[in-house]
Length: 101
Image 1: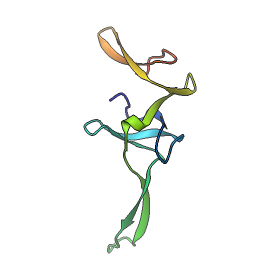
Image 2 (image 1 turned 135 degrees about the vertical axis):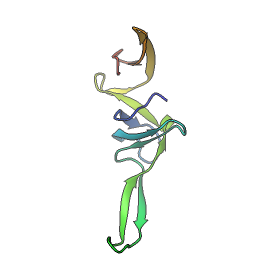
Image 3 (image 1 turned 60 degrees about the vertical axis):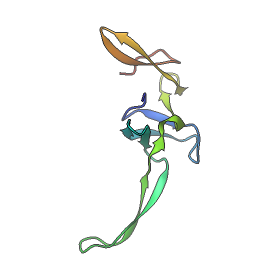
């Protein structure tokens, strides 16, 4: 999976198409990511002795194929490639050629 935590991504399909946000969490085993402000879900929290009942709005996971890495240098969404420098594998932006890691 090429998308990692703290990457800025653009949602390219679905109900939140066109929104940009930061990846809060990545789940490589299921190929899903949680993006800030995208796929907002409603969760009803039961009342407890210490806290009152409330309705929470939180981000849900979306599939990594529905997001694309946002390249700040090119100001556009881009694909990610890989290159090896000094024996280390690094991510590279296909549009600008900039090393991401």
